[in-house]
Length: 312
Image (tube, rainbow, N blue to C red; front, side, top):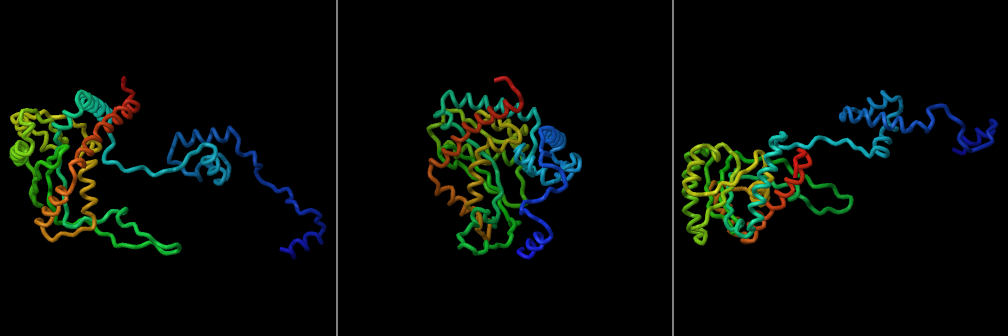
């Protein structure tokens, strides 16, 4: 560098300041350019920076600068969701949430006493541990730990769990290869009713507030007739709304997390360990999960009213 500057001054240079250079002036970032780029992005949110730069006639570096600094925008990948809800689905979510919330608000304690929910889930002989469970402490400069990818085992048992704010009332296990039919589920409701009367005798003269999702076996004619015969009051459930089902947002995720990394050699081991897990939980645990429904109904109403533009 010393030799370079020595040569420059020997050739007649008298200043260390940068000389004027050709190229686009710094005033390229003008309100007109910013508005034009903003309009292009709003028209096509998947547009590439290179395409914007070519259309506007500026460098990709300037486009990046405008997008991040002036428009405060960033490019994100789409988030996977089980299903994109239609406007009718969203309206039904709001309507059902309002009905359930009104019922809850009239007498919260009585609602929690009478509320019973049910759902099914597969329990595998081998359940991989979650990413959170695999976290380890490492020293500065030490490489991150590695682990081989493990899939769910083919051997599994389907658990149908009936529970309320006080705990588990009835669990049924179905081996792989068998399916839950309307007749099977109807018989299962009879078995549940027997256990319910034994474990909750103080509710013998109360009508059960029965909650289940919209699986076909739950909503068929045979099942509806059985629920009516047992005298249960069936709470409506919005389609494609696992966030409003205590089994899906609370009970089963925590069960799967506890099963993470465990291996079982037979269905009997799976059943024994699952029963032991539920028995080890405090009664307040189940109450906590069902109490979350109030906030979830409220949030559903607030968000969907804005999205669907429904009157309050």
